[in-house]
Length: 252
Image 1 (cartoon, rainbow, N blue to C red):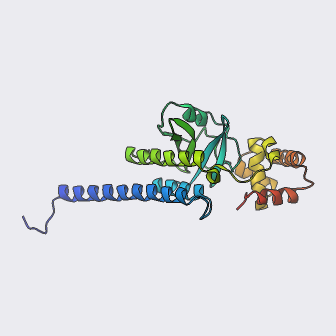
Image 2: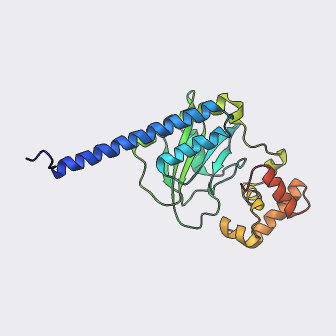
Image 3: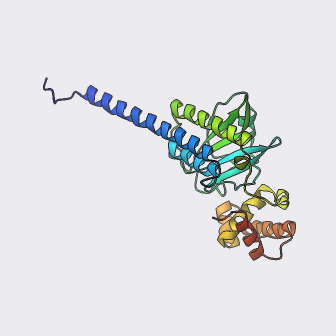
């Protein structure tokens, strides 16, 4: 056989080996990137932003959250994309089930019943929930979201995400800079998860109708939520609420 010729089997094997090498390199980049971000602490911005971004890039997913624990209650520590904002308290049975499980196995699910997104009106997607396990306990959850249904991640990718979960879990426990979410007024604790979603959208200058469409609720319901937000926060009008929300980093 000509040395330059190549059988179909050999070509397939070469392509498979190349994909495996590239996948391995992607996992190494994600692990190294998360480790570097968390080691830098707050020196280069919010370390959870970079850690979450590396985890999303590994799966080519769109948006995600880092959920910590306030006592025994889950609270969003950082988020990217159209999901619950920082400070929100997720009301999602899957979140507590994964956090409460004995072990660190990730859960892959479709997002049809999820309550982690804001206004999921464009169909079903895929979510990967990774426990933030450190010291033998789950200290929170890393949630990675694809807006479309995709194949489940490989076991190698899930194993890499488990390691990332350990790193973030450790950081949440030992670093006060990482542990602290965006500075949130105590009054925000009185907002319901839906009110906090509306509050987070106010700096974007959306009309009630536009917010209603994004959240998948009625326009009148948005109006009611805005009125309750003003009352709870002691604000006079929508403009003041938008400025207050921007001060907390919402709407960026």
